[in-house]
Image (cartoon, rainbow, N blue to C red):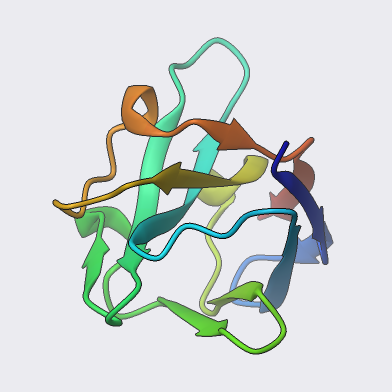
Length: 124
């Protein structure tokens, strides 16, 4: 069973930055996708950014130029650097893994394994 543990969430003022981390364990997929997702109260979960094993990336338009995903394959850790945060970025942030990933996607329903989430709150 794949295990994902997020950390790094918190409360910041608008314009601030946070760096989320996601430590993954117990998976051995050779071709996978990983992603960051978020869900605000009363809203559907949305894909923020996805990355595949080769480093190809797909960002949601709302975060382009502000968020940067990276991965340390040796450590099996995924990161999300979030800059210029806005109140509308406030949400629970989750990382997820899609095993046997041939096509990079940010569609939450395509991902198989999820972390427990970390809360991000941005005040104006």
